[in-house]
Length: 327
Image (cartoon, rainbow, N blue to C red; front, side, top):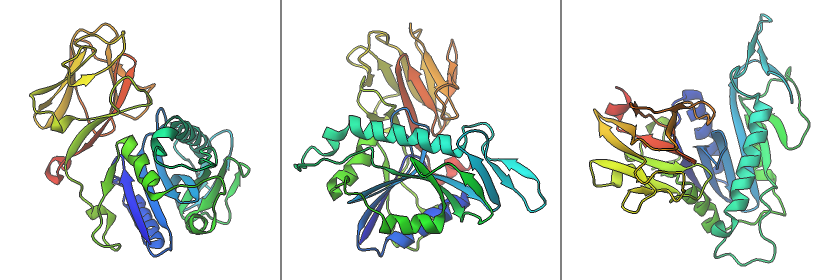
């Protein structure tokens, strides 16, 4: 029937691009409408690789690209075992794939429950969607090796290869999920995601080029508007603070009246603290625990940087032209 694709940040991994393209091509001829959400944050989550929505199903996937067989449990590191017997730890500096998927399941569920009225504002039905009924998977692509030894149970996360995941998308459903097309499209809009436009289903994912944009998206709080387009502010700088008149107004008593500003310098977005009381913080790795406080200096930002003004954190979603990306 049709497939809509929304994203928080653009994938630069060729293997992941090919996997998303295969997913798109598989779902496009099906007799259902699907919405794909890719590389985004839901409240205080880590970056979520993929969520697929259909009328009677919600699927959340943690994507892992591996060719070797895998050994993994609920606790401890997951390892890829090469043919020569050598071992490689998957994502050694992060929680194991099970923990990642489990954490993102709870963040996604909580975000949807918090925004349930906004999502279904015009849908009158006796039994609203149960946002806890999410089919959560660790998806190994191109496939899950038969020699793999993964023991994590079946709930709330299962591990499977890409072909099995594709089949699950069209064969599995939930009696507790009832979504209209309008509700499915409202979710990424509330999250501030961008929609990818494909001229043809066979177009390469790497060729998708959204218009340049720069936006701050609120991370799980209601202290301000959920999204502000930095590139649409017709001033030399974007001001942040508690007082009316700022471009980004944050309604918290711990945020200074004139807290910080962001501006363009040599083609980069830069944030500067204005001697605020509660501070301005920047993190580059998508981890709220890995951040630096700005003190009497300026920080140049990049895509997916986390910027926090006192208690209010935001993710910078940034897409520049090809010329800027290649610098």
